[in-house]
Amino acid sequence: MGLSISFLNIILMMSLLFPDLNVVVESATTEYTTLIYKGCARQQFSDPSGLYSQALSAMFGSLVSQSTKTRFYKTTTGTSTTTITGLFQCRGDLSNHDCYNCVSRLPVLSDKLCGKTIASRVQLSGCYLLYEVAGFSQISGMEMLFKTCGKSNIAGTGFEERRDTAFGVMQNGVVSGHGFYATTYESVYVLGQCEGDVGDTDCSGCIKNALEKAQVECGSSISGQIYLHKCFIAYSYYPNGVPRRSSSSSSSSSSSSSGSSNSDPSSSTGATGKTVAIIVGGAAGVGFLVICLLFAKNLMRKKHDDY
Image (cartoon, rainbow, N blue to C red; front, side, top):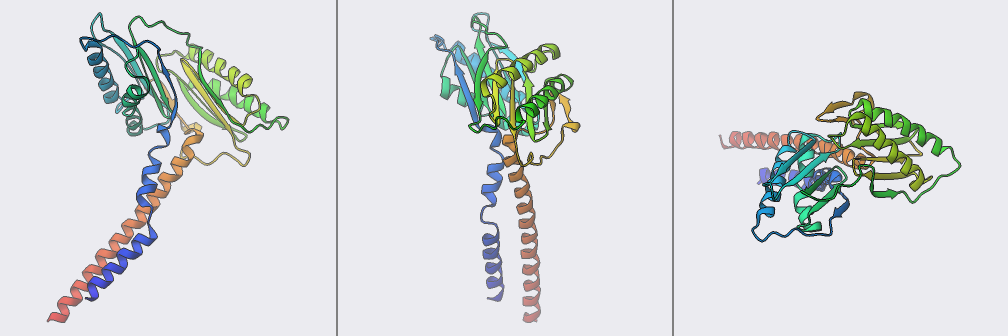
């Protein structure tokens, strides 16, 4: 009886100490899957034979499988009459595991949000997917697809000068990072990324265009995101200092047409969640070890009493 009571008491204590362990772990894995925007062509493709659907399904499968290996991949599927070109790209600071988790959601979202349109683009906070049926009219790489600006403004405080300096540092960093760069300058966090098949010179021009649009469109807003067809930028101002991240811009590295550096501001919550999950998981492991030791101790005591 003593053994069972001790064991139950320990289990109860563990449940009281760590009631939200599963919630913490789950919340840490979803910060990069927030839907930013969707772009759907107005025209649906005619598919009486099902060939387009087969080609689209094959393309989705290829993109998802490649997301375990690289952060950017572009492919073409179908026949000469049913050709579909598609690509995915993950944010430069995502691991292959997180990239896969992000990209694997996109085919379902594309079908749900756009249906069987001749072109579709779905952008999450950590990745995006794009496909086009052959013959779809091309748009300029500089065309703005989406913007969002923070509601708070801090005009007249010197913020815009700091932001613009950070913009300049980031624009140069994107070139040296071959398509991805993130950094902090005087409490302003900035991130920029170009599509994986865009060369350094064109990438610099695209980022410059996006930064100019941010200055005009967002003005003195403390945060903003500008998405062009071939690149995007994001920035956030933290008056009390940028939250600590797991890596610094000085440790950036390139991989498959995209470098890696700091995570973007939206990921600071996720990083904290992962840290908490590790701490809680470690504590839970220690608790489990204590349970095993107490169980063994009580078992030995019971054997001794039997003798």
